[in-house]
Image (cartoon, rainbow, N blue to C red; front, side, top):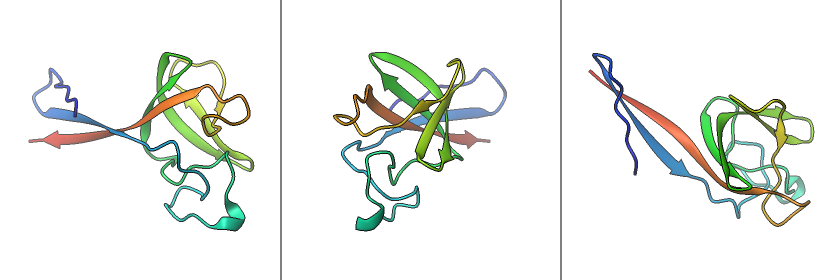
Length: 106
């Protein structure tokens, strides 16, 4: 578990929670149904949290956007969205994804 401290009066701890990329299917609620199972969806992705992603050895931070075909990643410094595909399918270059969890201390 990695933590970072801000230089402000209140501390913000950052925790990274790695996603299991062998999972697929579902639409972000953790529910996996056989008829919805495909390689463009992951049950732990959502459009509310920030994520750190490793793609082709490079790291990007940003959010996912739900589209009709699956998840699209919009990084803070990436010019356009990147489609999520389960590693090993459709020429996927996704290596690792971490959910960024911020915990504020008073």
